[in-house]
Image (cartoon, rainbow, N blue to C red; front, side):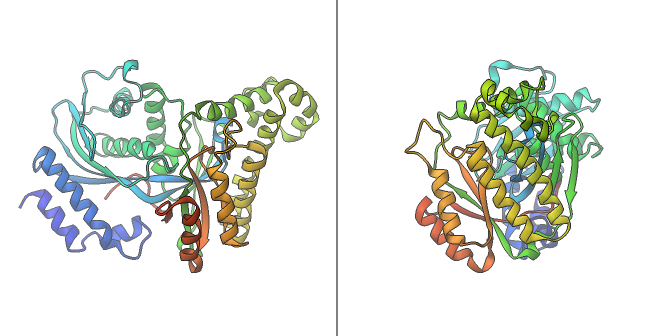
Length: 425
């Protein structure tokens, strides 16, 4: 019997049920098996039976604390979620990487040419090329593989489908060609390298780290080349809260300047002290020169800097709350983080579009329905996109109904924090 058929039978018969139950933080592990059966079928349809099909997964991520703190070398708290990119993979030793993602054309990378191609910036193929280039630079010989992938990570949700794709490619190469010698953090750094140098996007490292490491992860970016990563051992399931990501329905189009203004203004505020990043400055010293900062960088830059100091501290407080099993204190700090983003970071809506305040409307209805329970905050970059809420399970139906009445049906997504990052099944 072919390896693919053996895998499918094992999945159908519950052979991976316990593993899937753990991976997806779900009491019903069997219901995830069909996705893996489907991805095997997609591989067979695309590449044939394959010699030794293996299955991989890399999750999306959610930012819990530290809104726009990473680019100032600050602290964040993030977590992997139970939405992921999965892949069926087989070595081909052809000197080529061939990846077919469901719904997209096949990407083919000739491993004899791993140079940066600026004319192909923003193409997914170049993420693959960049990851392969870094592994090759590190001394690993990649001889080629075929992969068929599918993803249920929500596009444009702030759950970082791109980071999940980078992590799954890195995890595949690490497993097939590096004897799994590369750590989860290094895989994240390789993904960031590919996105920066080959894809043309100057992203931070939070998304890739949360996806690669898995679970709840505290990251200190004070040394960006060697970030301090701590996996927080906390059983989110026991809280009887759901993690909800609410799509506000707003469009990110025409907001590039708004996003760029945040790091630019924070950098301008730091420049008053001769520094490049706010992490280099003590808050007390910053406040001594508050009037100079306002005069030189502007009031909004001053307020955004104050947000950095507050939310950098909030992210660290959330870690301590979880370590001390103080979930109520954790929820209170999440809300404080959200207030800081709204009042000081000011990334809830774009001032030049005063009639378009979808994120604010989503936050408003979340607060109203929760009525003092749980927590809610802007999720990710802001201005458009999503918010995050921690909702008691005994009111989840009421919450979904109330929120979707404002933001639209199907826009409130109930998720779990999964304990596993990039992995082979």
